[in-house]
Amino acid sequence: MNSSIDCWHSFTGGYRADLAENSGIWKVNIDGDTLRTRMLDRYLKVKTLPTRPKPGRILAAAKFVLESSPPSSKRYTLDTKIRMLELTLDTLGLWDTKREIT
Image (cartoon, rainbow, N blue to C red; front, side, top):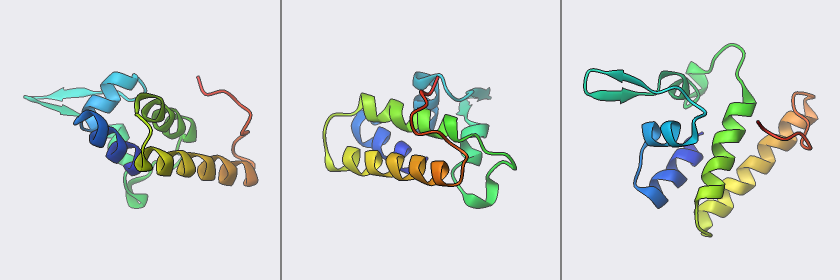
């Protein structure tokens, strides 16, 4: 998730809330004058991961950033990390790499 946000910021100048809002994958709340992405924020550190994380959301957000970004080394790195995560999840029996993310 951190790589997705980093890549998003590099190409759009936007932050987490912008990514959440534009992708439509994560809920964005307004807290006073600030946009909050509480659920997305839980995926940024191992310590705060949900008990039952949803890899589909992580992969969907990463692929959204990938599709929105021009070719670059950061985009290539993100693509590599997406593939590694899919293969790891598939090896653990938690993900089918041929499955489309909806």
